Image (tube, rainbow, N blue to C red):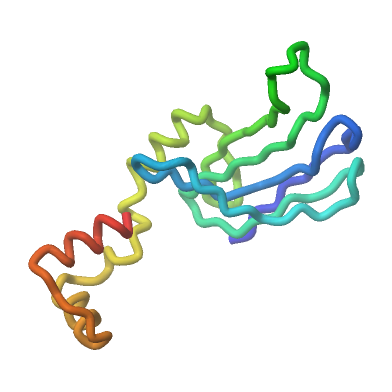
Amino acid sequence: MIICVSTPVYEKSQYGRPWIAKVDFPLGAKSEFKFGQWHGKPGEAGMLEIEADEGDIIAIGQKNFQKKPSVYMERSSSTEYNIVLAGNELDAVPKHDAVKHFRENRKAYNPLAKFGDQELIEELKARDYSIKANAIQTLKALAS
């Protein structure tokens, strides 16, 4: 489904373009952002757009270029995490709840989950891959 979010007018000298991304939280790695599109002109109202499924985590944000009180502080970006609900609705949640939701539901989105071990072995053989004793478990672990 396509998720569309309207963005308000903003001061382009103080803020960057709004952004939207689908977020994955792989174990032991940094968050992975797959960015969507923003339609609009800098400083004017616009629309964010991304393709996502129910249960996905969507982040929406915008960089803040305002000067900080310390030279050592970097620019900040406000980020809002959302869970995609039925009917293109978004449920805003804190980041830790988004990570928890992703961890609890990621197996449902495993692309290899619909295939049995034998089907995976046959596919690997068809592609001339050598098969080791734990290859199936390794593939499933990499896909999740």
